[in-house]
Amino acid sequence: MKPQTGWMAAGLLIAAVGGALTQTPAAPILQQTFEDEAGGWVGMGTTAKVTLTTEAANVKAGKSALKFDYGIKKGETNLLILPIADSKLSKMQSLSFWVKANHSAPLVIALGEKDGGRYCAAFTVPKDKWQRVELTPADFILNVGKDDPKDPDGKLDLDKVENVGIVDFGQIFVQSDDANFLKLFHVQTGDQTLYVDDFTVSETKLSEPAATSKDDYRFDTFARPQVSWLGVGEAQISRVTGKPLEGAGLQTTYHQAPGTVMGILRAVKGGELAGRTQLRFTAATAKATTIIVQLEESDGGKYNASVELPGNSEKKDFTLALADLSVASDSKDDNTKLDLDKVTQILFIDASGLTGATDQDNTLWLNNLRATVK
Image: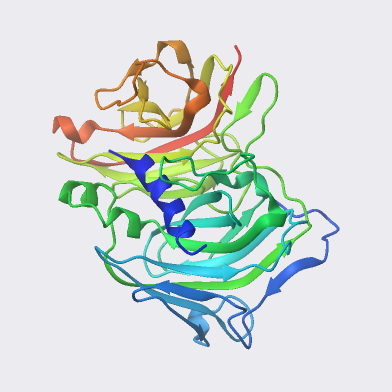
């Protein structure tokens, strides 16, 4: 698996073209309802096309919404772009919108700096359902691939943002010549459509999805309406609350079958795990399962550990010593040493299908995911 390649490629595409609200919301910096016009959004790519739709089923609010038609095909890249005037987003505290896709879609929204880096936030939307997306500047992570544009200061400078882009991750994966890779990421090829409504940039602050303290880094608090994870295989992921977990968490439903692999992954901002010694989380599964937990570095290093879940939707708390993680068979770093300051992804993988031992539906629940000093 090479999901890290996808993160880097999403940044290249953008580079090619240049919680709950507080009780007293601030006035919007930018608000687009798409009632009469596309608001400056344009389609870039071979089959990219931007229009407005008045079909009631594809409008979230008002009488119309933005419609983006594009293809997911080998040799073709398409994205939705909004040019930003100088310093327009300098006071941005939050960005929110509604989005709907005609397929279960892994999406990336990117902020492109003038003569600087590309900062991305990834999330998954369900098929044919409106999804609310709420983001803060802290959600956007710098692309650090060797071919990505370099950022001189390594931080998001909102006053230098020159475009906002939305891209379907499937366009990254479909470029592979490996049929197994395409199956693994369940790529939906062909003509596709996204709908966007009520796009707002504001000075209103949102709760942060992850929090860093001296002793405790939380990967995701699951406080936002969107799922900020991507699925590997035919995994259906959603945000849930309540049993078998306590509070909000992630639910992944999938089928265990010979020759299949299921996984979920989330980006980690570089440097956030430096100095941590333990990985903690709570998990449960419907059926007894072995789950591989993997950390991936920006240079291709992969380190993992496996945990046993008893099934019967019984939750279990885990504590893994980061020093005990083992090098993965497909790891490609130079020093065969886990460099926590280079970690850019965390994955949870059910590889039981590779043994051919199971053929059944299963559900994985996950929350309380954090890295601690001890």
